[in-house]
Length: 223
Image (cartoon, rainbow, N blue to C red; front, side):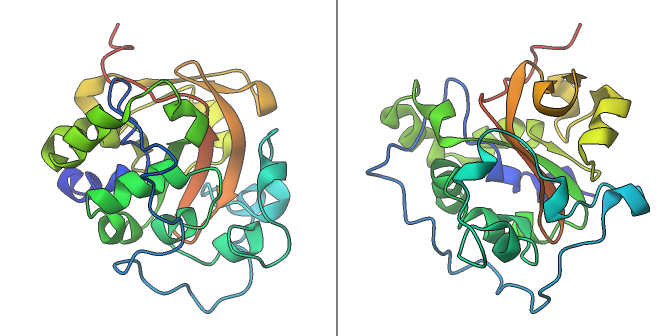
């Protein structure tokens, strides 16, 4: 897949470590982006990775302390609601990712991310932006090209579930120059470049999502 297409993986990033963060008052509603495709009509969760080995997960595979914060049943942002939708559309209703979604919308990357076929997304949760300032975020939001390397570093061009990540140990992100992503530990003790998984194995139509507690910085694991 083209790295340029996945620069759209802004879904993860705009968390540029030293980048900024949307504050709660400048975060657009997590609800909708006019560019996001309509949710799939399918009501069933994807086939379990345990059987397929392709990184696709089901609601039963989800784990992590922050998963309890997701809406229940079929409410927007719930596992049942997100599963049939492409990843950017699904993220737009996830209450853990409102700041990230605002960043994706600001850089017009919704369609690009939704069009990917099978990816893994490491998505910084809202608290990961707490130490970041609004000014820097607004500056970078106006320069999408400068965000691309950071965004790409949070996306892997292959779909993995937690067991797959644990087995792989080292992954190459779409930002190959940024260095490898190192997986350590397992289950709720798993980390990605030191970032803890708050809610993992979240199924969406075209991606498996891992909400993490930090914004990862390209170049930190080159050696």
